[in-house]
Image (cartoon, rainbow, N blue to C red):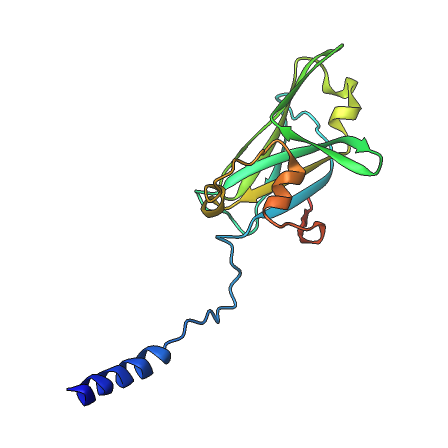
Length: 171
């Protein structure tokens, strides 16, 4: 009886130890990696209907479950950029101004709404810089501690994004 048990144990050990799991795929892992897209030199120019928006293509396209965050460079603190989350609103002497966005799996549209002529405030309409952060849905709910998504630096630190990982988007 001991010999039969020893035989089964040996066969089982050899069978189980020969199993390996290797990911030899050369495909990018887009379902669990956060990404950042930088869009610079944005000029909001009203179209024929007076709408002011820009469209940022997402390449590769994202999953329906992914979360998108958008930040605008609102200036600098010394040499450090100040990233404000969108949507955001301003009450200016000329009137109100608001940035907001929507997104699909293939693009992000950033809107500028004003109740005055936007050319009166080129500091808000010309040469703007945005960062679009895509957080995979798989990662967005995996933390026991809530993430402050209003803090761009906290978001990129949480997901291990380095400045060199940021993809530049040409419009």
